[in-house]
Image 1 (tube, rainbow, N blue to C red):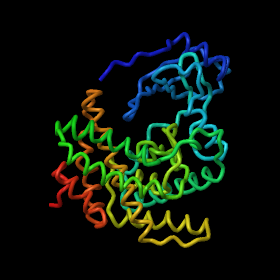
Image 2: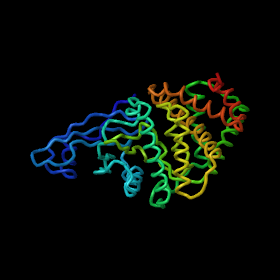
Image 3: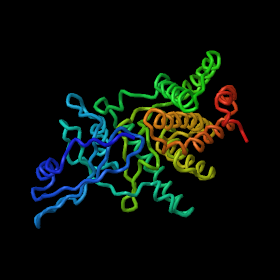
Image 4: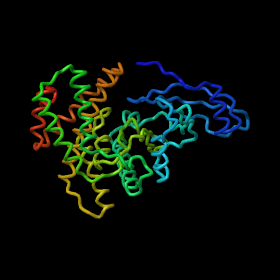
Length: 351
């Protein structure tokens, strides 16, 4: 993995934070934080000050891959949009546009993943109830409020975008990590079946989607959840984020709890909209979305290994493919997709 190049020093941090946080800041220490599969880099800042200092003692510094001197920043635009709806996202204290540095509220170290790994069944279900309820609230309020000022408004999971992600998976997982060369008929057949899957998804009603709503992007702070990593939000099926949360590569839930949470979300939605939603139809789209979302995740994990020389995600590929295998088995109308996928990926064959 590449060495972190910091676009700041201690003197610069003190100068900035004494101006935007509190004039009594006299010293700032920083330590690198582990990020997820991201090109952004994160640091925790520890602020020290004199007796008059009354600001936050810690902040999180997000360093963008490159400064964006002549364009609007999507993270800030989405953060402004969501915080304007009183949704739980970190506060933005300052944006140093020239250096590509965002000074954010520190939401602590406990991710939902960390909390769940220590939870008993009752606590685990309680956390997922909170997560599903937050997801529904975010999706409902953001979808109703969104307009052209929000970057997500003009972006959608159409067939082209969904298939771009499938081609990314074919390039980096099938071709890159597995070193499998597909002949033209097999590639054409596979892309044809994946396109049919994506066409079904692209026909679904559009909602605001976070796009990475999973256990590593939800922080637990004083018992409540705070959302991170929302800068890639776009419009898509309501099941998109639900699949991210409940078919999470990092944590595998018992199937009975998954379907209980899917039912909870669907019931929230039909209560809010005043229209009954057919359970079988809703779950069908959830499975379709899970297949696409998990294949996309496998492509990302492979890319991290082959292109970024970062192997720490490889262990998540088998459980992610298990999600795909099981969803394909449930949705028999996808048998043509299952058959061609199994030729390319034998691990998708049922045990």
